[in-house]
Length: 252
Image (tube, rainbow, N blue to C red; front, side, top):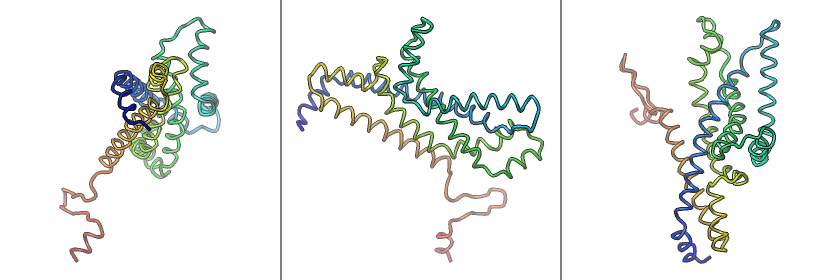
């Protein structure tokens, strides 16, 4: 590999690489946040207890059916196909030309929401039933139980999976070039076409993608450690100190 050529192509085209990386991060960050919110709402709705009979039972069955179709459709079809159907399909069916950036964020958000809904539902189901029973015994309804008891634990537990979705979104934004979104992959194609060199521009793009995903992974792991809190802590009320077993052995 000619590293001098790689350096030359990067120095000549770094503004295009930078614009592409910015667009990739903008879409992936915004879509991951929106997708997490969608997934949180859908996951909570799908865990509402269904009564044995009555109007509420029929209503919840219909809502759960619609949400199941949404989840299975967006999890079971490629994002590239979804992009083509939503962006070009809306234009042909309704005569509405969507803004490309809006369409990109919308597509990635609802796709992420479908995955996050199952992640959230799994996180809620993993919480011990005794906590639900205790909350209900205190007079909390389902919504209050979710807000004050369940979701704080679920959010911590699903943080690694949410971070994984973020990393996936950074990489999957490359499929949005089919609707002419000027993200990193689209910009690289333009550079390769202008220079008639393909290996070098795509090698640079690989490095940029790796830097973005590696940085995001490290930041998310730091957040996880922050949420876990210190290994040792003091209970202020009675000055009891909780120690790790190995520390106690050393003192003994």
